[in-house]
Amino acid sequence: AFQPRVFSGIQPSGGLTLGNYLGAIRRFVDMQNDAQYDGIEKIYCMVDQHAITVWQDPATLTRNTRELAAGYIAAGLDPTKSILFNQSQVAEHAQLAWIFNCVARMGWMQRMTQWKDKAGKNQQNASLGLFAYPSLMAADILIYHATHVPVGEDQKQHVELTRDIAIKFNHDFGVDFFPVTEPVIEGAATRVMSLRDGSKKMSKSDPSDASRINMTDDADAISQKIRKARTDPDALPSEADGLAERPEARNLVNIYAALSDQSVDQVLADVGGKQFSEFKPMLSDLAVAKLAPISAEMARLMEAPDEIDAILRDGANRARAIAAPILQKTYDIVGM
Ligand code: ADP
Ligand code: NA
Image (tube, rainbow, N blue to C red; front, side, top):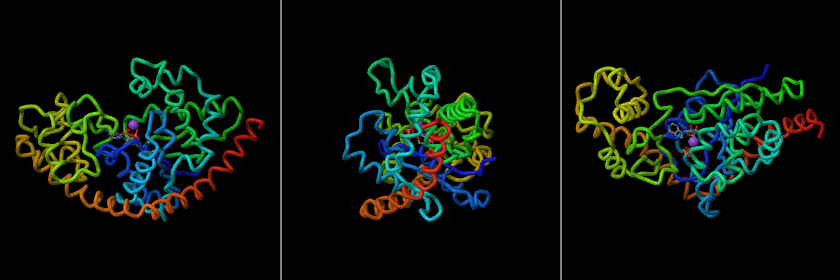
């Protein structure tokens, strides 16, 4: 039996979105503060080696890594309760990923929808790292023997691949060494959609800034984006079933529910029958009230990069202390 341990990460590939916040960071904070996870290590990473699978300007990458750390801390992650660090500073991730590259099969990677989406039509021109991304992600998780991985819906397939790698490694070498990790996908906003297109997820890599709310957007930008968000002409329904065929409406109600810690049905009991012209300003006010204190604290921390760097250095040391013996044992098992 493996002792429970929590791991997750976010790419420092651009500004954080409301999707990252509701689908990931806020869940990290909830788990940190949930008595159910007392005494369990929580390890939260900035995955810069994942970010460089597509081109990153070096100075921007450095800044984005600090800004992501600032976002973690401003949202409520406490470096004395959670381990916060930058992936590339713990070499064991990349070392284990190489072994997993030799365990995982080409066909497994080819089936990943994120690979297909991100590589687009010109797969021959995508980086080898983008193709191998899920193998590095498996290493991120399994180098800590993590059992619980809080992620948004879009990462479910990668966590399942992590399970496949653990199972194949254990089987190939006749050991019970890597745990079969569970994704933790919970809450009203496990998949926040683009404000411009209800069929696409909200993402920091979407070229349209109007498609997303950034954690650093000011009150004006937030209310303008919500005001312009695509909807339909109907009033809000009084029950969740009424949102089934209305992806844009459902998305805005899901966001409201997640930000106000209510279920979708609770929200609709209050706002059912309202037009979007009335609901959208309510949503803007709520989003501003929740995000403004976080972005103010992020801005303060960004003025103190040494403070951030010291937290990440300390986190890397603590992470390495867990990872190093697990890598050593892996090498023993493989015969290296
Ligand atoms: P992005 O997709 O914005 O580039 P990452 O791939 O680094 O971000 O994802 C970081 C975390 O944020 C993952 O747990 C992912 O599932 C979550 N996440 C990203 N976008 C969304 C979204 N639109 N809704 C819910 N969770 C999301
Ligand atoms: Na993602």
